[in-house]
Length: 253
Image (cartoon, rainbow, N blue to C red; front, side, top):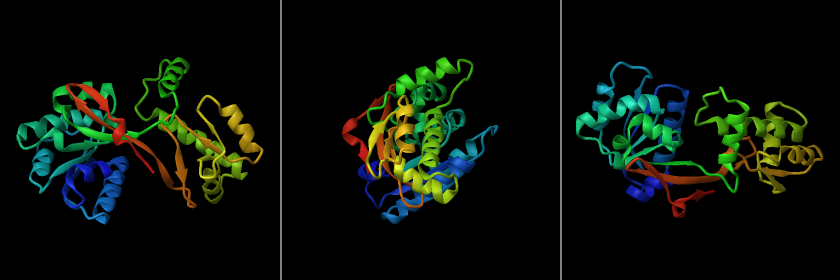
């Protein structure tokens, strides 16, 4: 959201498009709520279903809205069909389009097509000293037949955090996990452990010590309800098929 505000101003008009499932509608709702709260305007919301034979009607609906920019929440496979439909309207500009971390991936650019992705920007969770590439190599070695997805690292982090939180709190009720997540998410400091230092992390947590789990996708602090409180995010853009990262635009909270 900070990136959109910097680019167009807090009171600009944004049209939101999303795949019609819990991932798409959930993020779309969260973005719209935050954008409006900070003075922005929503020009329209368009949803689409995965596997549709055509996305021409959705593309037409998107470009008809009042907008300074677009925010899309989608997967590469479905956007590979929507993007050409948007291009055919001759009213869509990738340079005013912002997307999620699903597209911060070379395979996603290849799936959609470099020409259609040229100029698109987005944000992704950022690691803080974690060797994410090494984790991916280890994952492929351990599960060579698993095709993998762009969210594997996030799933791994979620499982590790849940386990550490349960150990810390001595239970797995929602109330216990909410408390435990604060103990292992860095709110109270403690030694920072990465994905390949879990044995030491478990020992500290079992001994009642707070730790900071610096996961594959970075670290996440949690509030008293167990909801994400802060983290680090990087800004990326695509130019001529190449994903570019500008560390000067990183956002940390």
